[in-house]
Length: 239
Image 1 (tube, rainbow, N blue to C red):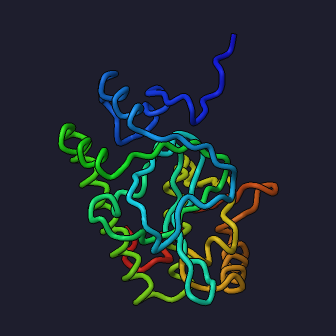
Image 2 (image 1 turned 90 degrees about the vertical axis):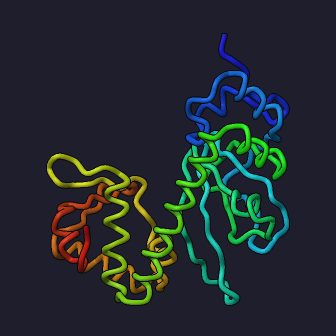
């Protein structure tokens, strides 16, 4: 007989085994974390928390996908990154006790476990491996944001779009034939929010790349980067 679905009323350390931050922890440690967590199942397009709101819980994404984003006073969306199942977020507010710095929105039905600030800080104190992973993640975040500031300050829209597509290609995995399949295909609006421009400019630049043979649609759900090396060559000083 199949196991019953996990619900917020049935915390389980099994779900926490999917969280990268907890890799290598023993059953006792995971059971203790699971018992300290609150569990929530959210539908797609539901807010988890909003920028400048109070709250310092850390969230662990056991299933689903969320977007870390924010909005300008005029309502323009600026997206930072998406988290797949296994990720965590909210640790900045837990560490410094300040208000939230971004909005978080579910992109699909998601199962979330949340840990209070006190419980999270206690976890870091008793599990040095987890504390080290948090520091490494935060260092990576600073580097990513530094690169993004440099891109926005020094590069035009075409180069910023090329760089974002290159990141997506590497995240999806580059095939031996030097192609990369982006599925689901990023929407024009999402790309615009990532590179701080408008959807019309993204549409023009994507069309130009398609005319050069660097991009090709595959059905309604996928976008194929036809030549990752050629895309990289369009970006000054790309690694």
